[in-house]
Length: 345
Image 1 (spheres, rainbow, N blue to C red):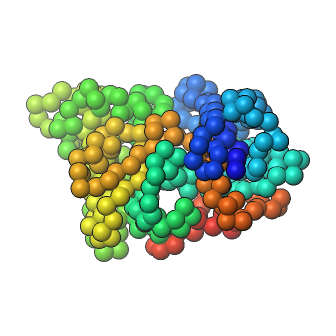
Image 2: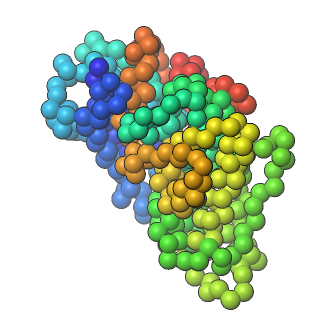
Image 3: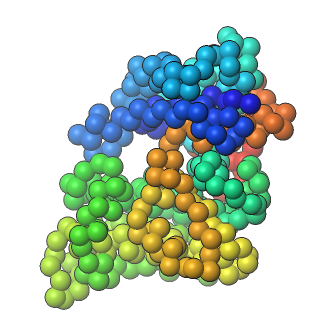
């Protein structure tokens, strides 16, 4: 079965065609980064307008690269949450209208499930495993029992890790997107230059939770307080020390989950899964099977949406023409993840 997947939750207009949830026939991503760089972050109104402008050409390009027509497509899927409401509505409405006009099944997909599935597109991964979802909006550690069966173990109590990267980069005028820029600068710096504080969360109630608000504040407003003597106060050293603390905050909680669950396979997803230091820290654990998506599948893309949709379609699931988008996923609770059910607001 060939599924056409559309993703427009933020500032990428993306469309892909995936066969049987595994074979990527095309994967087109039109990025809006140049339009948002001057504002040092995504401007929602600009993002939604660009989606309106680009959605049809991107879908046409995906079909052309796959050497297919709409007649060859078995189903159409789109991201319905979470994300910027205006951006979501463009891709979702387009996909739903297209499916209706072609009399094709339509599926709404939470793009958090997509990020976890991205690594499955190029790897054979057995359930269950531990998932590490890290992006501009989310930091989640979970047990993954199936493609739509997640148990939340921990999440952020304030900022996400990607948000912290972007805000630090914006404050110091390094540019946008912050994650890539800080990662590159950190490679030229020394992580020992500063010893930034690590959040002390309750070991019982928040055993797997993370926090980045305090780290962000320390780097932005109190950097001198944590600087170590003998190191140049350069942006490269600052980025290296900040990145080291952020990544070790994530891995420390993840390794707790490894110890407690006994699961030794870890699958990462989301934009921050492209971070080189996070990848190297996990690679140091030779006792674990750490799986990352290819860099081109870490960011938002249509292939991960089409991949997840295939499994819903195979199970017999469909979404109605009255299905809607939602900017947020419900409040996290320990246990079964609320966002696994794509049909409920």
